[in-house]
Amino acid sequence: MDSPSYEELTESSALEKLVEHGHLFPIYPLTEGITQQTMRKIVREALSKAVSHAKELMPSGILQRNRLIALGKALWQAHYPDNIEAYETARRRLAFDELFILLLRVLYFRTKSNVAESSISLFPPEGALETFISSLPFELTNAQKRVLEEVTQDLISSKKPMSRLIQGDVGSGKTVIALAALVTAATSSFQSAIMAPTEILAEQHFLTVTNLLQGLTEPSVKQHLISIRLPPYSKPILIGLLLGNTPARAKRELQAMLYEGTLDIVIGTHAIIQENVSIPNLALAIVDEQHRFGVKQRAALREHGKQPHMLVMSATPIPRTLTLTLYGDLDLSTLDELPPGRQPIRTKAVGPERRSAVHDFVRREIASGKQAFFIYPLIDESDSINARATIKEHHRLSTDIFPDLQIGLLHGRMPTSEKKDVMDRFRSGELNILVSTAVIEVGIDVPNATVMLIESADRFGLAQLHQFRGRVGRGSQTSYCIMIAESPSEDAKERLLAMEKITDGFELAEVDLQLRGAGDYFGTRQSGLPNLRMARLADTNLLSLAREEANILLESDPELSNHPLILNEINEMRDTIAGEAG
Image 1 (cartoon, helix red, strand yellow):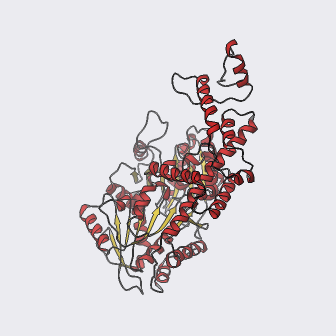
Image 2 (cartoon, rainbow, N blue to C red):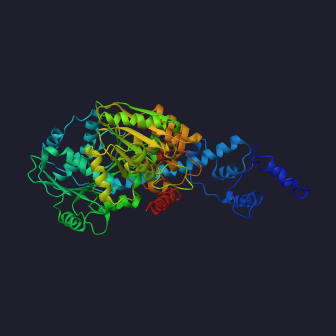
Image 3 (tube, one colour):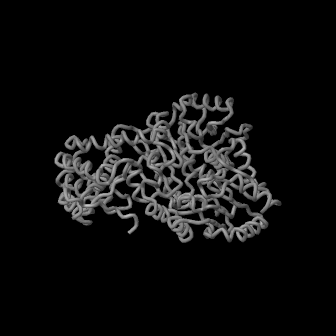
């Protein structure tokens, strides 16, 4: 046995010890000065008093239908089970309670908001959306057409504000759908906003929008502002980029235009929700990369208008169990089709002994006119983390490995102007290799880049690795994702193997959830997911039962007036999550 826990049986306490050791016994996390024996005694005494006073939340019908034991018994058996089966029965009951309250909270507040809110109806002139779609340099996929129809129905026909989540794999075309929604609001004489978590991603959105609308754009001398014409809508549509580091004069101009209602679409970061920014005519708010924003940040964006429509986009495919819990209050649209012509990305994990061969391969790709990303987990070297660092590796690559090539450096500590300059040079093809940290995880679109080299790949999570891979394979050429890991742990080996075997982001998301657990999938504090003590979101059967019972209860008691203890629980959970996520 490794590190066994044992206790001596003294004569004075032999009977008590034999009783305890006749069953399984708990091992608790300890603090200095407290032994397991002392901790068990404290917990046992507390349980003895608490079990008889435990208030049963669940209606008897739910307990009977799902063969759940009483709450008091479950609490005791979770700490002092008669056997393994008794522990699992107790865990199942306590886990059901957690999932039931979690799902009921989502369904209850969604029902309340649907009743309380009336939507802003959008009436774009007939043919405006068609003009936009026909101007695009490509055909929409069937999945894009389906999701666009769902979004426009929400905006034009729904009696309640849209609350919709669009999820899709890397490169599935979510930005086009978002732009179509923005155009629909603008041609209805309303304002709209799209908020991204980073300045690089916001700038990429602005660049993508500019490129997509190229055939409709009027000449402009301002870097932060473009104007388009979209017949039969008679007025020009103004689109602005507002960032935290936007020059003061340009920032004041954009803020004034927003307040006056003359700026139709604003693209930016959290700068959009600062106190000195007012968008009085806001009809549509789009949040990109949902899980990186706190609950209060999303609410602040929505407060700019009179119950504006809300569209959420997640670049990372979300496991079904999490869409039921984290996003159960949103209608779900899924882009499950990639644009035609995309080539599969060849993915391989190798050891450090292959690094020289990998560099030779990269040189051959660059010689044929292609470009490459080199990704590192750290900016500077660390004494405590065994991983390669961006700044040092950039110098080594530039001087020792590829002295004849143009190599750019990108990391989060650089001024935004420098980051923009590096990205512009890489997009234009002036740079052969971009050495970067994870700041390029999402939002970077360079079709000529065909190689993604991830160093110290064992330091990254599966979702991040898949997002890195998605930065290549955006053109018609064959692309490659190469992961180098120095000494990966067993968990890291599983992640790398999954990357080699699986290219579908939805399938990878399910694997990621299994490997990491829900608590780490997005990060509890930002996602709006409470700490689950006994429940596992990967337990789809129990999750389905809990959701079914939550629906039944709300159908019979929509206000939960007959279940005050349950209502109190979901209110407490809402307050706790809002406090943590703000």
